[in-house]
Length: 354
Image (cartoon, rainbow, N blue to C red; front, side):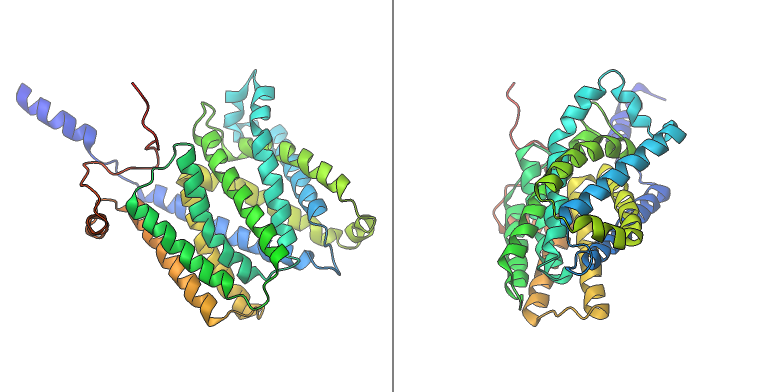
C-alpha cells in the first residue's frame, strides 16, 4: 500500500466513533431497569414503614439500612474477594481512601434521613415531582467541579425544567412546608453524593467497582447515622423494632441492593445519566402511586410534570445527539456561534492556563 494511503486512513481510523455493542446496550438497559424497579419498591416500602403506627423513626431506619449494607459487604468480601476488584487499588492506603469517603458518607446520611423523614408529611407523587429538579442540581454541581460545561441552550433547558417542576410542586393540594424542606435537603445531598461518587468511581486514580465503593461508603455513612440516632433517640424504638423486625430486615436488604445498583449505574452512565434514569423511575412511581394507592394528582401538577419531562428528555437528546439538526437550530435561534466541537461531560468549565 502506498505511503500516502496509509497517512490518510490512519487518522480516519483513530477519529472514527467507537462502535457500541448490543451486549453493552443490553447491559446498561438491564442495569437501569433494575435500578428503577428496586428503587421504586424501596420508596413504597419506606413509605409504608414510615407511619406513626409502624416505624416512624427515619434516622434509626437508615442506620439499620447502612449496618446491614456494611455487614453484607464484609460477608461477600470474605467469601468472594474477587467480586471486589477495586479493593486491590486501595492496598496500603485504605485509611486514606476511607477519609476521602467522609464527605460522601456525610451527604449520603443526610440524603437518606431527610428523604425518609419527608414521607411523614408528603405523598410519594409530590416527592417525585420535586425530584425533577435533580437534573438541574446535579448539572450545576458537575459544572462547579468541571465535569460539565454550560452554554445558552443548556441554560434555556434548565429554566424550562425549573418552570415545569415549579408548576407541579405549586399545584399540590396539601402542601406541607416542613416536608418540602426535608425533601429539598435530601435532593441537594443526593446530587452532591452522585457527583462525588462519579469522581471516585471513574476518576481520582481509584476506579472503584460498585461493591468496593459500597464497602467504603457504608461505614462512613453509618457513623454519621449512629450519632444522629443517638441524638434523636426515641424510647419507643426498641419496641417498634421488635414488632416490625420481619418487615425491617427485608427492607434493609433491599436498601443494600439499591446502594450497589446506584453505584453501578453511576459508573456506567455518569452522574447526570443516573439522574435521567431517575426521571424514568419518577414517571413509573407517579403512575403506580396514582393507580394503585389512590394518591391525588391535580391537572396543574400533571401539566407541570409533563413540561418538566419534555425538558428532561430534550436535555438527554442534547447529550446523545449534539450535532443533530434540532440542536443546531436551537443554537442558531439563541445566537450561539458555530463551533467544531460541542462541550461534553469531560469538557471543563474553566480552561486550564498554559
